[in-house]
Image 1 (tube, helix red, strand yellow):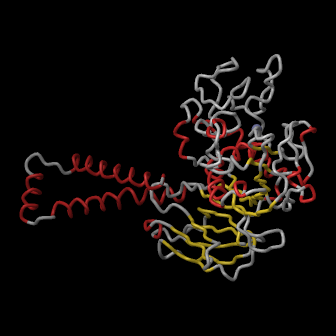
Image 2 (tube, protein in one colour; image 1 turned 120 degrees about the horizontal axis):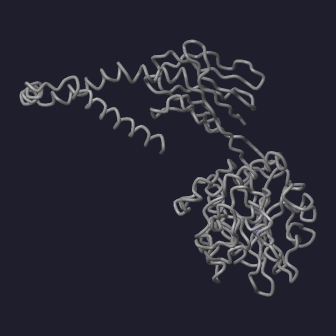
Image 3 (cartoon, protein in one colour; image 1 turned 180 degrees about the horizontal axis):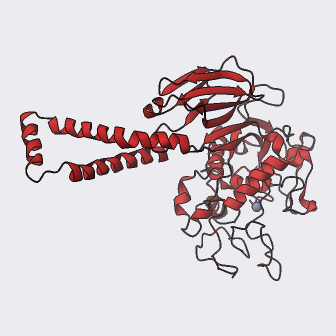
Length: 456
Ligand SMILES: [Zn+2]
């Protein structure tokens, strides 16, 4: 979408440019315009063709040369997005607790939107906080293989005779063990386990979800770390997904956009509450959440959305960031993790939970061809035909670019294939699983675009 906008902008710009140049070069007060009008009357369409020709001349003289220069001069970069499989264990003692698949599907959508800053409601973030909104570069997929390698849709349903899992002393982990009436999680070093069950106690919906930080994470004290079988996220069955019809009181209704899971996944990746959980201390503005770009906050929002809330005065004072997923504001209010929180979660995944990464996807940030639409190498290793698609703009074809593919030990798999069309497909079906590097070189043999990806 951004690329399309960029293209339209450039087109408008060059049109303006050529009109201006025409003013300087061609406008002839004694009659050039009149001549054009005359020819147009005589040969309808003449002006249009004339203008087109002119635009081409301008393009040949200026724009294409400029683009060639950009190709030679511009470096590239790319981002890695980590893919993590998730399994939902739906643990139920009655039909209402046996939540429908659609809630799980829309829950994954919410998680992916929120963790990639792709939620539509980022528009509601106040201007002071907008530059702080972050992308964690973590992507969640429903597990497609169970621990035995059998196909699954990532939803594991299990019955229980335990009517609810809440206690008068907060929470317990019994739902995570078949031997205690719950259901064993799948290998926590390969999956994020999410248990969906009744967390109420005495009919009260007191807990909407909980999760534990990665073992050994420096933001936390050792008394919160749990052993492997207890790693994962637990969500109250009335709070799973977006628009859950089971939300039947004001707190549940204020928390019905699927962001209980967003918040709990934040804990799972090491985040603390934005107010640092020191609400009962004498000076609750003393402790920070260890994140630099969240303002100090004294207490959590109480399922409200008060934009003028400001519980701590600080240097260069900012109001409370009620937009943050790690607050207790309403889901309507919650629209962002910060850049700092995103970096902490990404690092926690790479450091403490590395083994759950099932794939790395590459998103190119190429600036080489940034004035044209086809400015990217597209990789589709997962399609049925398994082809690598290399797209380049027509203009670039003139500079004799070639494509090569290397395997993880640097051997050529495809060597210097000249790109003769703006979309070239390379069959990669016979290739072994593993990392590959695709590069585009210019006519001087310089690597201009590099994309790393995984075939699996
Ligand atoms: Zn929390």
